[in-house]
Length: 180
Image (cartoon, rainbow, N blue to C red; front, side, top):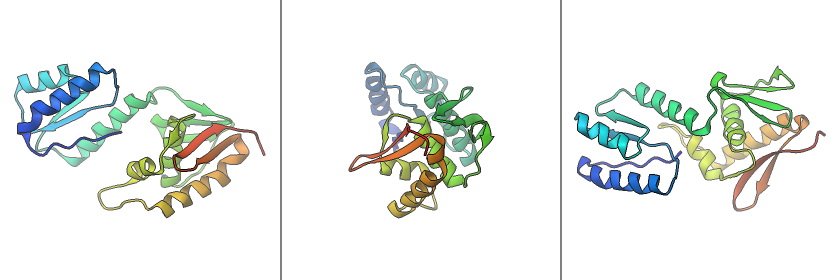
């Protein structure tokens, strides 16, 4: 997910132009507008230009977090369906990963890394992107921490017909492999 931060509401028109161009190119990036402009016309124009959601300042951080999670579910199409890779199945709406129908116990971080990779199965995911998606306001993920998560996951999931390949200089690729 990409986040565009615009500090000054006077730039909102430029943000809407950017959003319009994004949608004209059929780029389906989820967009949440955060602004002090609370007029009904502003809200309608933001949605008409292609925003998926619109929040007015001030707002509660818990609401922002909930809306971002909702946008991610819709963006990845994970809400209401499962993703299967090898013998693994991800049910993102329940935050559950299973192998052959049996739940796999993972730490919260290991689950999140595997979820990111499963939702992008067959696509290379950059280490920087994984780090951004795992980071919080209080903590950023180091390359070493991400390496540790991937090492642990490789040990846990390799026997289920899933491989995490390192694509040098690009990132990581999750794909169905062969059982060990």
